[in-house]
Amino acid sequence: MTRFVPLAVLLAPLGLAACTGSKTPDLYCPQVAVLQQASRVMLYQGASTDIADQTLDARITGVAGKCSTADKDMERVTFRIGFAATNGPASRLTGQTLPYFIAIAQGDRIISKRVFPVSFDFRNGAEQAVASTTPIRLMFPRAARSAEQQVLVGFQMNQAELDTATGAATSR
Image 1 (cartoon, rainbow, N blue to C red):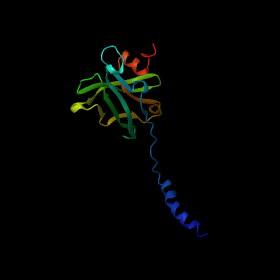
Image 2: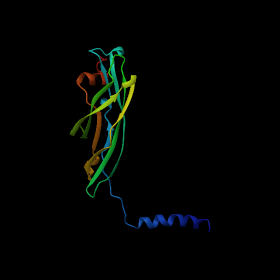
Image 3: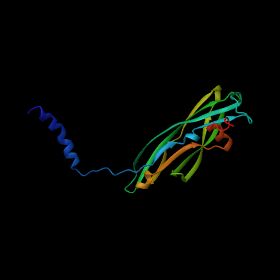
Image 4: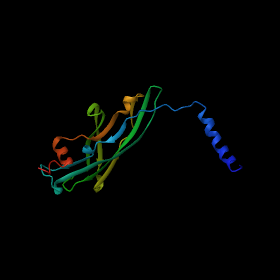
């Protein structure tokens, strides 16, 4: 009988906490993800896609963040995006700026999209560079429909860059 007393003493605070009525509100945050097809961009000198003509190879390394309550009707998604780039053999640049996007989608429909710049610094002979955004904060209504949405990030590319990134250029 004395073996169960310590367990009862440990569980008592949990039982009391359940009775306090301080239920945390349900959050319906959208998923934040990197769009696979737009996660890497490779730039080349001229029309060639030969490695010797590559000027830049950039990747989105990931997104990290959290969802929290903003007020009784809204929730906040806060995240950062990480980037990495390698200066290609054909590049003589000391820096490169690329466009990336943040889009809010529901199914196949884009609800909102904005494009921003990310810069890579290759000064002093650096061949690799990393970058990260400052915290990005998006507000969503606390409603079930918000959980059906996605926040997608990727590089903004033209058709030739997209073909190269998805392998369409090499499969022709």
